[in-house]
Structure formats: C-alpha cells, structure tokens
Image (cartoon, rainbow, N blue to C red; front, side, top):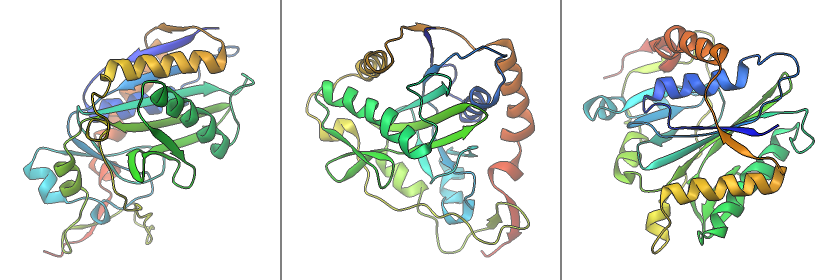
Length: 267
C-alpha cells in the first residue's frame, strides 16, 4: 500500500496540532494500514510538551507583545519555537508493517535516522543524537522530536530549524523570574522541564544550503528507500477531519489545555 503525503494544510498552530493528534488517534478502520508523512509550518508560536508547566518554559509577556501563540501538544518532550522558517514533519506509522518499530527508542533510531541520511545526501552534515533523540550539526541542535506509541500506531513528529528567527526563539523560551504561575492541572506539582541547548539554523551552518522543498524531496526519497513503497499526495479522511475539528474546539482552543490552571500571580 502506498504512503500518503500531506503538505502544508494550514499555518495555524492549533489546527496543526489538532491534525497531528487526529492522525495518531483516528481509527481508520479494520484492515486500513495507511502510513502517512506530513510536512507543515506554522505562524510564530511556542509549543510545549504535554507534561510541562508553561510558566517554567515561556516568556508569557514577550509572546503576548510579539504575537507569538502558545500551544500544548499531546506528546511529551520539551518546549520548541515555530515560525515559517521551521519545517515540521509528522510520521504516522501502522505497526502491521515489519519496518515499523514498536518501541520509542527504535522508532527514533529508524525514522530520525532516515531524515539524517536524507539531509546528509544533500550535503547537510547532520547527525542523530540518541541521548536527546534529536538532530545536530556539530554540537548544535537543529531538530527536536517527540513520539507516541499506542493501539498499533507508532507516531513521531519533529522540527527542522531551516531559517527561523533565533532571536525570537531565545527570547520567547527564556521565562522571566516572576510571572503568572500555571500548573498543568490542579494535582500536578512537578513539571517536566526542558533541557536547555544551543540551537542553530541549517541556513546558518551550510553554505548554499538546499531549499526547503529539496529537503522534503530528499526525505521522501529516503523513506521510499527504507520501505520500498511509493508515496502519493493525499488528503485527510472524513473521520480524520471530524476528529481534528473536535480536538481543535474542545482542546486546542481551551486556555486550560494550552496554559494550565492559574495557581497564583507573582508580578
């Protein structure tokens, strides 16, 4: 069965995250083992992991002043910055295929490994860092990833810093010492903190860097090489659209999901 390619459905971060969660969780029906690769970009936003507390990860006032959205994804991991200079990828994989790993470690090694090989093939000197499940050029991070495995589905999504605004990235992800305190929920005392790292853009590290479209093509070619299966441009199913729409309104438009519960104000 050929893979399905989805490309740039929207630039709204909340809809993009709803699409990703819908891809991971929508039941496509018995016998439907469709694998999907999606490329997407968003307007400026900070995206935090499911188990993080926003006040420990984000400069709330800076984001509000600069029109940077704040969103929470359904997967774990740390906080990341998005803008149109950031190419994001999503892989939704059905475990009935023998090349699809059942464990997160193996999932990262196999499919982030494919993306690294694709980058190297177009002269981007990338390497996979298994400790952080990320991609680096030298010691600098260009990609973060997060994964989810459940009900026969292996799911992974990640970022590629191409020519993002690194000044805004840094300023939005350094919280000031005193700002409103939000807890993920009323019972969560501890928060999963991001691991601070040095980041860079592909464009800043590679002379005459390939265009973003060429990066997409290289990734598609290497996915075909791994799986031996064709990749065809497609669309969301009706069920996926309905699931994404429901998630968008019930979850991703809900401040208590994106921010958490306001615990106290310390201005």
